[in-house]
Length: 406
Image 1 (cartoon, helix red, strand yellow):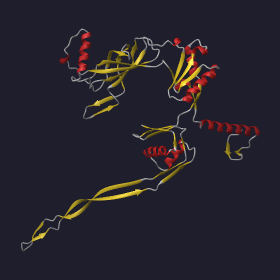
Image 2 (cartoon, rainbow, N blue to C red):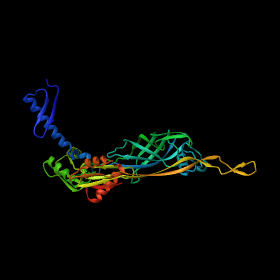
Image 3 (spheres, rainbow, N blue to C red):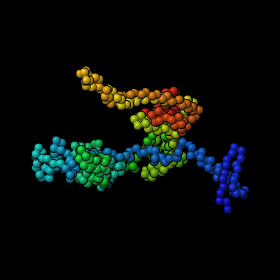
Image 4 (cartoon, rainbow, N blue to C red):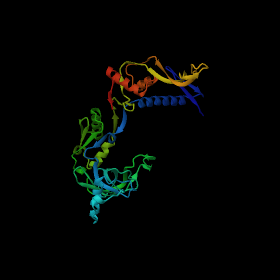
């Protein structure tokens, strides 16, 4: 039984070291080596297979933003101060609805805070469905830890109430101590109420009324839109889809012969195709982050990088300096100099210049991002230097990609 095989590839032959291999074993090894080479070539391909559902969305099937205003009660004296007048006014209005009349000017409570309540209403939400809501402080409350959100109406863009929210808050941070000696982790004025919202209005879309299904690309691209239409047409064996522009592909429901629009959408979304990533480089100059696409190509270019550093250092040495005072009088009454010394700090400034030799890097025709990054690291460049070098290469015309600076 062969337990160890070492294979070495050369330009003209394949050499096997180890145990003697039969003809069948050699054939299997050759096949395995060939498949490994094929797999390596596929892995180096920048294009990748993705599902249509991962790169598109269906027009009309989307989330809706909801917002509301309410009160958080039960705080441990960390709520809004009396100067936050709208909190006191809201509390007075809430008490009035409960049958209690209070004068807002005389109320002073510290366990209540005004908050905005936000949520995302998913598509096809039915009355009674639960939502997670986010609660954010509006006034000058110090913390919402331990608070409970009172029932608040959540409105849509049209002003209609689509959900109600209420419940105890779950916080992702905490604070301890006081202003002079304390610690705060994450935010204590923003929390969530898991399943605290209940949908009150039906917002579902009637898919059966759709005459066509429009697929919207998340990253608009003419080539990708055309390939989506081609993949759909190939699957149905006839022309049922067409690319209208770089971000929209329409599928005619009647031409597909599908009796159910949800079944049609599911069938289309599970088709796969190759996605061509755009040649783009994103640079964030504030923190030195650089993101480069794998298919970015460069024309022949040479980069010369050198470092000139000048350092100015001021040091203080101790020197003995005569005091210059009167040392007393001699036997004839004449004054004599004082020979005592006093230690003083004397500044000494040294200037050193270090001019490192310039580092040179050359990229040939068709060089890719990996060769660029490896070359820049080899000549000792930092992220900040890479930003400047990429901008210079783009200005010279050697960078065949879009350069986005944030």
